[in-house]
Image 1: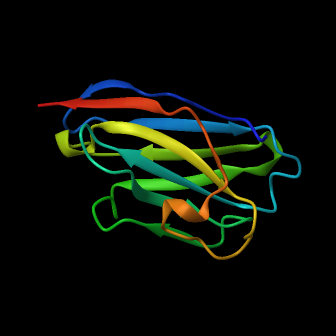
Image 2: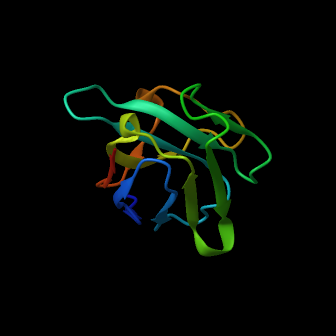
Length: 126
């Protein structure tokens, strides 16, 4: 089992910025697609952003385009999600996910991902 550990969540006010991180135990890390999903209270888990093996291709949900940026540092086995201009509707548990079967194509459905972290809570207040 691959271990993914998220960190960096917290409580912020609307308009603030926050960056969450995910460290993976898998080696090699730099050959696989990584993604962030989130699950708002009482709702289904949804795709937020994904990144291919070298960061050359990224995908974003329409709700976060222009505000969120996904990046990775393969030397540190880490993927990041920078969140700017946060809104109350961004409140959710944010999960890091790894797709062992892809290194180029970023999938957007949760069924495609093989390993998940425990999640980190992000709360945005008005």
